[in-house]
Image (tube, rainbow, N blue to C red; front, side, top):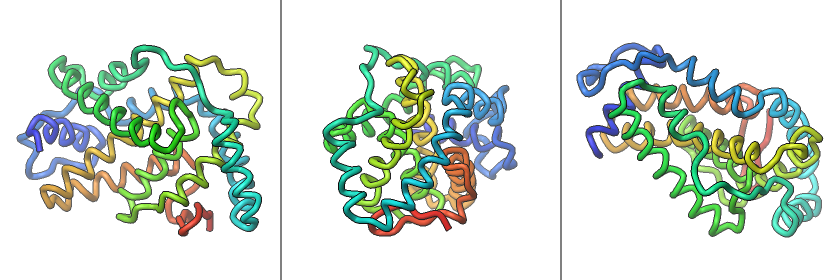
Length: 248
């Protein structure tokens, strides 16, 4: 693992307010707090609209989890007539601003940019494989799937994730507020979800590769916060089955 990436993640560890790990010499605290980063993301993701979508999603999940044909129909709709797609800009809209919310050191910001761009590349290759490029619902599903894996150490099945993606597409697609968003606004929402996933995934990767249990617990906590932010419920109420996401 590139030592500079580990330094960045230790920096986030410290600024998140979880205390100083023994390996803190690898990085210095950022002058900006983790809460400031979350506030920045909340603005970008249009929190009121996401809360509205959370309620819609809960109902759609419950209905489709109990009716296989309804879930099949939802998946076909999301594949053939997606409601959360957008025309993407040639450049990222939020990566640099997000990196700057974590540090005001130009070198670290540059390294963070590389990390997040790498995260986008990996996610978008998978989204392309699944036939869901430039799709807000796919980015939201990625956020939920990644954070669930980091928080619980269990990776949801592809079937469960694609069912969730279809349900998220329907939930956002039934929102008048979302429908009114232009492509740039949708892209910002999409990028926010991917950025929120990339940070805990990078931390999880470093911690597992280096067998750093303290760092792993920290990023599990961060993933739990992100899950609650995305879905509006405590992580202990969430459970992925073989075919979908359930709320307990």
